[in-house]
Length: 317
Image 1 (spheres, rainbow, N blue to C red):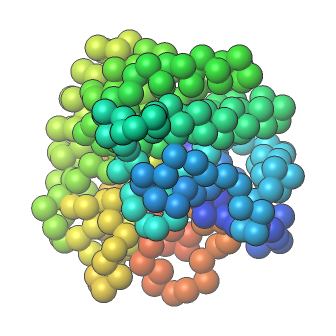
Image 2: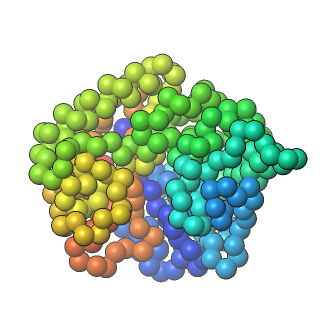
């Protein structure tokens, strides 16, 4: 397995990466046997229809703080995929970012938005180049923009002038074939939140069978495009029923269930591990600060059964 990874840093605000609690979390993450970390950082545009956005000096991690995290993780033996993520400040999923096909008046909305987004990605491409990051993710689950092939190809060309490592785009599960410009990047990335059960109580064997079903389509996709696949995001909360909706974070009332999360992780690794067209996992996600709450219902595996499963798989294979 080329990438035995985790996502780290999503949602980290100003000052968090250099906090002793973040350093402790990074050290604990490396103890799992990981060899890659997808370092995620975010900025926001106001609404899905906003054409401009920028850095908020009051809350976003500075370049110095981000560089500190990169260097710390590299000192811990990790390769880095830098992943700048654009969210909507009003809570709308970034997949809905988009504009009318026919421009109104004298404004070219798509051109304005891609100009701003290209500058955003190129800024972090410079940081990735200067700090020796081995990979750069140029976008995540931006379904509404993916049909704008010419704009994406232009962005990729600009990034390659700056950054000389490998590029990946993070599609959403089941929507990978909508992207007609995957040939311009080095890997097929996807958020692999594939449902592997019909609800609570599914066994490890049941989930393995479900993964076998999804695996056939992913293998065919890799063969069609001649590129390896990376699960840029994949995970499941430690909550009952979440293996049927692994993407879910909106049901805080579900019962706590470590076993279901553990089965989801183990089934995915068992099924995908030895496939030569598959590069590996960036599990979602390892928190910037380690969780302190007992029976934490989120995606974290820290202190749960899944942590031991991942450590055993990552260190023994």
